[in-house]
Amino acid sequence: MEKNILEQLYRRHTKAVYLYLYSLCHNHAQAEDLMQETFLRAFCSLELSATEVLPWLLTVARNLYLDDWRREKRMLQENPDRKPEQENIRIHEAEDAQRGILETLIQKEQNQRLYRAIQKLKSVEKEAVVLYYFAGLAQEEIGKILELSYGNTRVILYRAKKNLKRLLDREEMMNV
Image 1: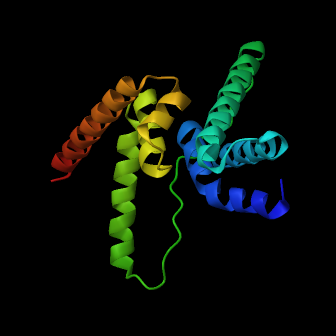
Image 2: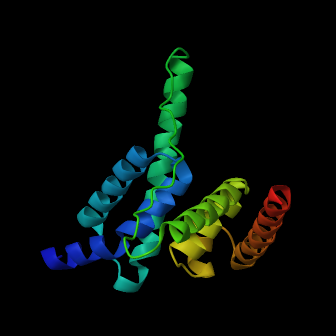
C-alpha cells in the first residue's frame, strides 16, 4: 500500500478505534497502546476494500483487547499479590474558547451523565451502542464484530436505547 493511503486510513479511523477501545478498557494508556497495535497489524496485513476497513479494524481492536484482558487475568492468577493498573475513568474534553464557561460545564455534565449511563449497560449493549453511535457502524457490521445475527444486533440496540433512557430518566429524577 502507498504511504499516503496508510496515513489517510490512520487519520480517518483513529478516533473511532480509540473510542471503542477506551469504552472497553476505561484506561487511556491501554487504549492508546491497543490502538497503535491495531493499526500496526492493519498496515502489515490489510487487503480489504475501503468500505470494509473500519469494521475490520474494530474487530482487530476488540480481539487485541480480549487478548490483553486474558493476559492480565492470567498474570493476576499466577501472582495474586500483583495489583492491576488503576483504571482512569475520566472524560477528557478540549475546551472550546469560543463557548462560554456555562455552556461548557453543562455539556460536560451531560456527557458525563451519558457516559455513566452507558457504563451501567450490559457489556454487549455497551459495545453495540459505542459501535453504532460513536463509530458510526451499520447494524450488520456490528453483528459481524460481536458475532451476533442481524436480528440479535437490532434487539440489543433497541434494549440498550431503552435502558439508557430509563437510566438517564432515573438519574434526572434523583437530581430534582
